[in-house]
Amino acid sequence: MLTTLNTSYTDTRAADLAWALGREPLPALATLDLELAGTKLQLRLLGASHQVLLEEERGICSETVACIAGSSTPLPLGVAKRVDDWEYEFAARVEVLSPGSFAGRAQELLALVSDHPHGLVGVFPGSPYAFTALLAQHHEGQMHWRTWHAYPQDGQLVATRTRVGVRVRRRSSSTDPRRKAVGPAPQSRTGRNPSRTDARPR
Image (cartoon, rainbow, N blue to C red; front, side):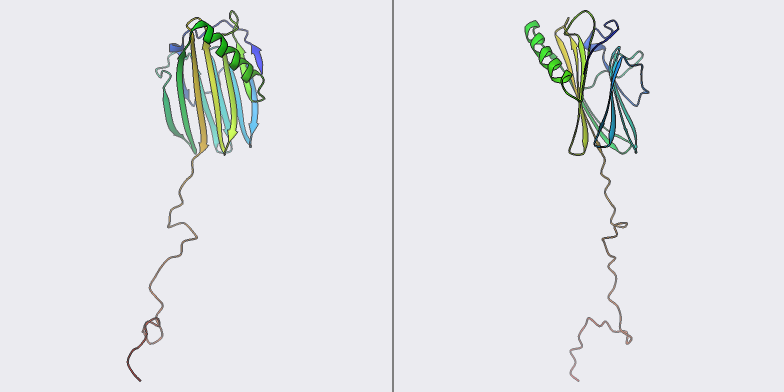
């Protein structure tokens, strides 16, 4: 889905982006609601980049990458955390491209995401290559999404990848019903172990 955002271009530099988990939903300029393999996912375009809300029976996971006032957490290169019953992984990189390469890369991403049923793109006024794009998919029991934040004036493209999967809890041996307790062999009425043979002649 492609939309033109009715707002000024707020996040003008890649260095201004910050990352946060667990924030409440922020005012959105455009949203895309998805349900993939029973998991609800909302992709949100903000005036200052993006937010993704994941909702399941076990709870809600919220990721925000944006110019957040008062935030002290810059955009990290990589994060691996446990969020309730989920394993959360995040990675980001900044590509610096020449004007020609930037235009070509922007056109490819705009075409890819805008035509995808699980994609959302918002173009900011003033430049056809100033955009934020999000693309989600469900693969092998895990939720994945990718985002791109384009800054044509600097030739910078910020790309992020996120994976959220259910944490598998190991069953302890003491509570595993498949494991049987091993105890001493039963004794006969005479007090002797029946598994032993009496070698004495009769």
